[in-house]
Image (cartoon, rainbow, N blue to C red; front, side):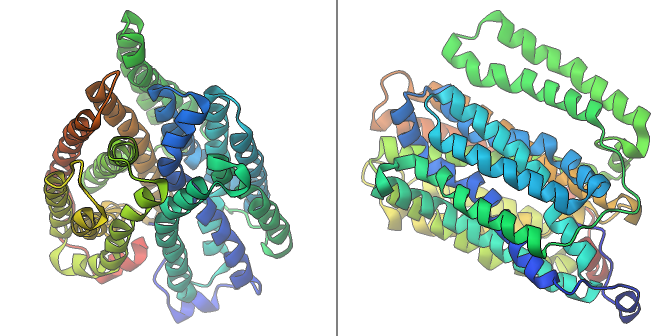
Length: 482
């Protein structure tokens, strides 16, 4: 969702398109690809990372969740910094940090160093990524934004396919003896080249109505999430001492303080509370958080079960995600068209189809499972996912005033990232509790089954919440939202 308006001849005449906009978009899409790749590429490499660094289960969870959490809490602030100080400047700063911390990830000698580098990498991405779409909207005339946005969406789809496959190839073939480290080190030359190209072709833009960052709000929500996630991830290994429960309880008043602070700041708050006056936006935010919690949480036990429990190689594990990504790619565009006719029921059906596919997949997961046993259900699950992620952002923002479109978009994107971080923590607790200290094939498959049923329940909740979304969405609303 964005602040763009319908492409009209009058709008185009009033807009001065930048002459290097397509070259700039090509460079910016490289950055978007790198971020999306780093979100997915690490899952397949987790068993190798755990073995090489002697990382415990909690550390494995933090490697996956640390990046997502840092990206989520910094995302809205990163966008406002670009509006205020210049999008090109913030893009180059974010890319520089992303490149340096990717190098640190690749050189990490302990799990703690890797986790710290992943968090800093995520914060750098939070500064870099908001500038991509903001620059696109500032340099392209309204009539070209749909095509430019479509290219960016295509890159996102490609990254979701390429991430697990690239990870499997790099880890299994042990290029230059680097093993899992190659998945991070490959960012370094790409990042340097992108920075040089961006310095040449990306124009500097700023917002005429920039809102100052709400640093207090960012610190409060970060503290509240830390109070929840640290005990969730660490509690199991430490035997659930008293402080873990006190910490989770303390998150409630900190969240309350964040809401109070946001109300005091009004429209300049990190998350303007007036957005939640819309029932559709409230439901859409909850759906985004729950859905991506289920999705991100699912792939952690899924990847570990395939490799450590069922003996899949890294490349075999990466290939199994291919049907899922194909399903999403096939359904996400048609679902946008269907939503103008069937409205919220597209999301309802999508969530239920995905839940049903996961239930059927559970019937095949045993010691003799292979790619072709999993592929049909993963493909159907991907088709269902497209029905959720395609229209959800547009439907959640259908009742939002144009002046709040940017804030609503940032909030929804932060909600799905935060949901992913919490999902990894919660599903990790369920999964690692189930496999115990000396896991065998049965322990892995049984624990994976329990975690997957939790995901199925979450998807059913998403289907029910979708009934609170707007009943219909017009073609004009859909176009404005995208």
